Amino acid sequence: MTVPPLIAPAGTLSDRERERTARHAVLAGVGDEGQRRLTAAHVAVVGAGGLGSPVILALAAAGVGTITVIDDDVVEYANLQRQVIHRADDVGSPKVASAVRAAAALSPETRIETRRERLDAANASRLLEGSDLVIDGTDTFETRTTVAAACAVLGLPLVWGVIQEFHAQVTVFWTAPPEGVPAIGLDDLYPAGSADDLPTCAEVGVLGSLCMTVGGMLATEAIKLITGVGDPLLGRLIVVDALTGTQQEVPLRAASSAPGAGTAPPPRVAPTPPAAPEIGLDQLRDQQRAGAVVLDVREPHETATGVLPGSILLPLGDLLAEPSRVAADRVVVVCAHGIRAQRAAAVLRERGVTASVLAGGLAGWRS
Image 1 (cartoon, rainbow, N blue to C red):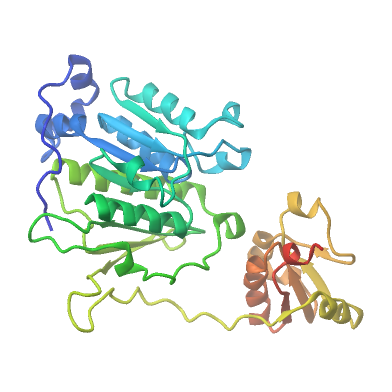
Image 2 (cartoon, one colour; image 1 turned 90 degrees about the vertical axis):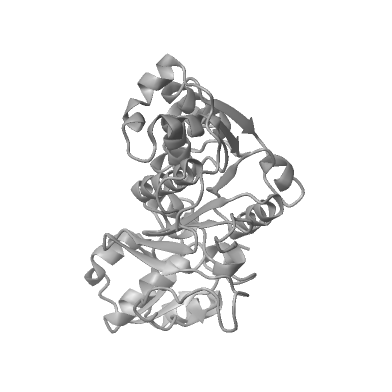
């Protein structure tokens, strides 16, 4: 579904910028006019983390004239695995500072405006107002819902992506699109309350290279909307599976568009195995005394802070790679919050092991 260009073209490009973006000038559908539209555009990027980092790089390289980066966080060493605008020397510094440095090094004529604030319902409209479109690179559904609500109020298109473990989703929401384009919002994909209990990437991990893939997709959707080239992901959701190297397209419809309408069913996946039974700490000790093995699947930097006496230490990734390393018949699996333990227990149960999980993980039993 083609849509008109979002942005009117700027008057001229500087000689230096014309030289820097010469490969766009010969690109069918973009050309000099499309590049001048990019120069005139103002994109707000919410979050300078795993998704926001490659988005900022791609937009700056593309010659977007103004990028507002909204993030209140500082760089941590564990960010560097996937947040590619930051460097080891940036640890402890504001993430927005890295954004300014990285964008200026790529595109000196791009203006980077920074807002070192945590976006919430009280300030979202103020932070996003004045931009032409928004790209959401945040990592909680609470913030994503707030961003989507503000974009709906302001009538802005929202380029949206979410990533976890080896999987991602990408689409474009726009509740006030041009005539003839269906209005689709976040609620049409995730009704209120339907995604509140998803684990964070700190709990289940995220493939760093996939962040760059998805960030590039988000930036491409923004460029398509700005220039009017191609077919943006309006009414379509792309589901990415990095493990199989596949992408699937799922059609989206407004939930209120017709009786029985709404989001199309997601791609077919294998049925989820039943969750392993959860037990309390006292039950764990009883089972341990009766001969069960306590398997701690946390990483070494986590187990260095303390473990349950008698535990066998085997990080989840090592277990998934070689489940035969656990030879016991009865196992109680523990981790920080119980999420990794359930994954480990599922693999063991497939091998015929009687496996249960410490409810809530060790974090819930520290007292």
